[in-house]
Length: 195
Image (cartoon, rainbow, N blue to C red; front, side, top):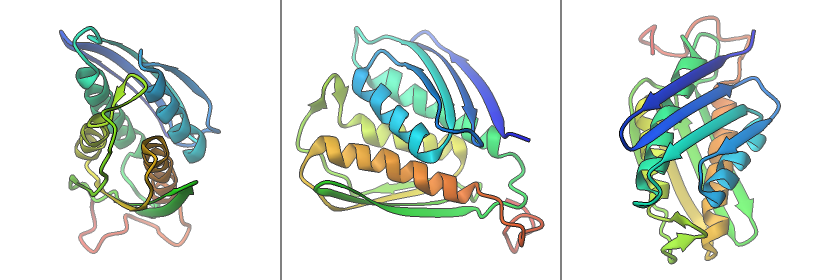
């Protein structure tokens, strides 16, 4: 049975609908209004083998902040709902992903406790129409609404596009590993008995 979630969130600033299938094949339909952000979400879905549909109508006449942050909020909620009770999954995932000059480590724990940490520094204000300071806001929002620990370490890299893309792809691979079932895990992977 596929683990699927469909979430909508409507405010005065953004109207967002997201459909996520954790057991997909990497199929995407993306419309955020920001070309580079679409590109990042496409990389996330394809490399995590998630089916992802994202439709956003945001106040881009202001800037990209609400569109990107609110998409992170909704994606985090979709991840949490799709994962479900977490019985039988590995819970932890990590990936060290190279992309040309960039090398990024991502580690996650689907612990039920939100925490975000990243040492990523960008030297450009924008990549296309995407404001680089929104990378932090997006992943922070995902980590808190999905209730996961999410850590990034940029081990090397100078090209802003490559660093950002490596972060999205490393997150995809780490999440895919964390939600993978392991037949040896018969309940939730926790000494507490719940997550």
